[in-house]
Length: 559
Image 1 (cartoon, rainbow, N blue to C red):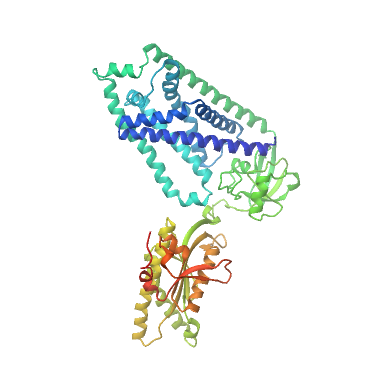
Image 2: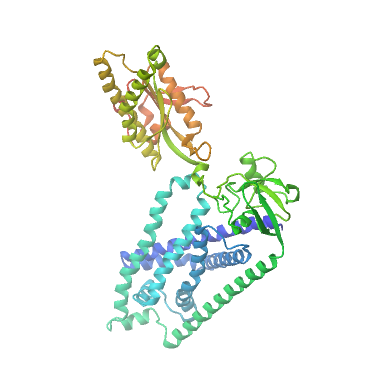
């Protein structure tokens, strides 16, 4: 088994075991939160949960995932070649190391107490027993730590997925509400059950119901807890000892790496190039955290390429996806064994002159293309000052409709402009774009009345609205790179705007935009347009005057 294949396997195993544990924690927190309503509902959900977790198969899956996740984490920690890492990774490791310290007592006094002493570890017993005690406070902290640890892992696993980025505001809200719900349920039932457990009239009955542990049983449980904690500290000490010995053993195996655009560093054989960079304090982009998925850590190996191990299939696919040259490699995947000279493709230049956003973000948004009709003929023979004056008056009239709807002008294109509506959801973006188009139509009518009063020719426009995938990023030299948008969606919107002239209308709204705005298109007369440079026909609604957009949608049924 090669080291690269083994690394791929351990990553998959860590993700799979983490998902099992995250699912268990999620339902456990929801179970606790039901105490906000009643103890009966809380304990009924506990019974349903135990059908899975305390069955033979469920127990094997749960504890295998726990041991695998912890074992892989300890193994990864022992094999680390440097303790330099991003803040989020350090936070996740520290939270993960704290979890067993707080979890041990809870595990022993529930699962072990149930199996060894027949304690009926119902939610009423647990919440009442630990409420307003140091153990209760520890378990509340444990709840937050476990949830944060899991959410960090989930986010950095999925953050490169477009659907995850789109739903991130919703996920953050849910991720905040779930532990709050659990703590509220614990607070309500903790107070009630604590009072019942120590009420002379109900304590004896509850002691029998829960088979309350005797003094000897509690002492035994305490001994088991202390043994478990001692065992954990011993394992952690062994891990740190292995790390220290490996570090000492590697100290004599250093090699030089020269960055074309940076310093020369001394790395240690066995480390990845990304780990060498981090250990030496050299800024090196790695959006996925060094997992070989984003390719932002890639380098051009100018000298020493022939001495490197060949790329794995996963690394090959990642490099092919970005059309990387033959001498490109991923810094997080290569383990240099000889001196090399490399060039970082994405260079933070020590000052982070280009932020991560400069690499581009994919979003699904609505955009608006606007152009003034007959501008060249209208301005022929006019002084440049008059031309500029007209354009500025025109933009002063129509741009407030864009900004007022929540859009921004991405760029001015002579007698036209491109606007983007970067809102949280597709629906909000599409609705804002349609509101802006309608507002532009009304503003144009007012502007033309002013021109008529001045005995000047009126202005005609064309607007194309489309919604689709865009890439937003900084394009240009490092010190002069304005943020802009690119992608096939921009071309489609531009072609729609150009088509308005042939159709003699002011506005064309694509079906994608209408669907995102929850407009039922079944009763609308959409036109299938073949647009230059667009592979598939685009269905769009033609509006003679943009200001009448709402009236044109009247037959449609909004969802």
